Length: 158
Length: 294
Image (cartoon, rainbow over all chains, first blue to last red; front, top):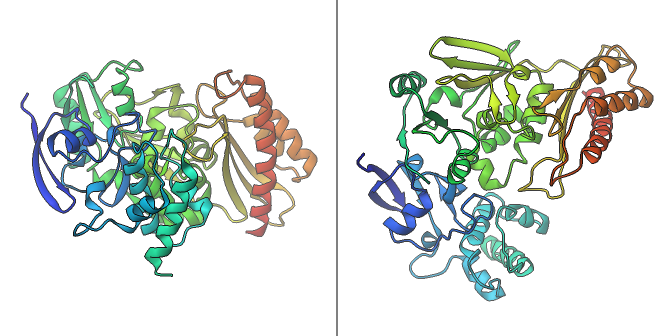
């Protein structure tokens, strides 16, 4: 059976890509579009390292079939910086040193970005819940929470 | 994942036609949060499918409609997030929000559907006890037409439902909430998110006009039997009674007896039975209090 052509708009750019029906969105974005910022951790939707926005919703792209995202708007970690400037969430992660091995960070940043769009002034508990679908096996959560709260403050312009 | 074909119909009729045309070996895919993981694991819970039929673009499965006197039509294809965010559901069926709002992570809730949660038929499904306690009915459409059945009859065992090949769960029908009624769902888990119920309990109560007796009580239990179940003896012990602490405690003890849990990594059978009693008792108090406040 020939591959199937699907349309994806990724970080504002339109792609037509030929996929097998059993390819995940994560695999397609990494291997076919070359956007390797999103990571595969568990591959079963538990760890959140592959988090992306699909039509404005945060999803674990390792368990979303690419064919299921046909026609969708996708935002990956590569889409957050503008004109070479890091997004405030990314900048806060750098400044707070909220990174150890770094593998979970693209997903953490996407989840934080999504949380702050929905809730610009979260409490620590809300940050913890907002990132509950993202695991850091270095267990460096404290600085990650600090970074998200700092980014929230900066984005509100307090 | 091993190969399979994939179809993206744009209507319920087209989806049913696809199953008819392609024949055996097909499975529907909604949010995919259970199914894709099962496919990656090799599909040992069921024969590996030859083809998938996507339900994502079927408008019939996205219905969310309230009719005065009839109740709510809740499309099976609504995601947990869509259910949670619905003002209609929040206002009239908060117990459903209790269940839909704790499935997996936010990412899971953005993908997983309320129909998929039922069709995956895990005994621990968080939306099952609220649907049971609210006495939802399921509308199922297939090659031989349509049938509507109480959700209580929908599950046959772990991973098994009454759906026949080529049949699809289209929507749930929920009766309108009665005056002086309230319903609530709670589960016991060590974690707040990304966990599966050790025990889940939903309670729905209706008080009579003067608020002194329980006109109706519904108690549904998750993760303590091969399917989500109603605790009917506990319900019967409450109906027509004054909702005293003693009556509530007796009903909770009966619910414990009706549970037939297994021991697994999440908890022993004895612990689960204990939890059924404790959580049922707490929720009955809470639901009765809410029903009184109206």
